[in-house]
Image 1 (tube, rainbow, N blue to C red):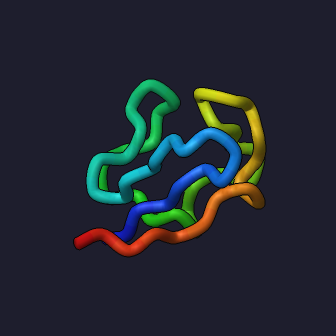
Image 2: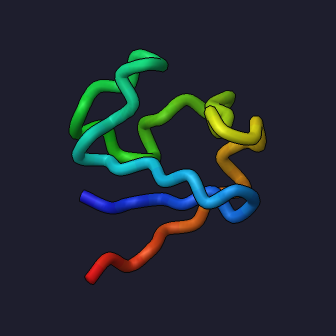
Image 3: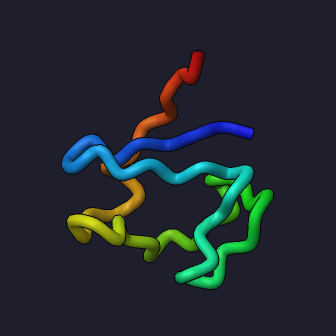
Length: 55
């Protein structure tokens, strides 16, 4: 499982946790998140996220 960070505001999508507020189940990989997903903090699209290294 990976984490993806919004390059605009820093919000993090964690594949292990998903984002249930938007109906994205825990364990949903980034590639399976809808292309029209927008950052819940600043509203930018998936193109403005990058994978981040943790630890």
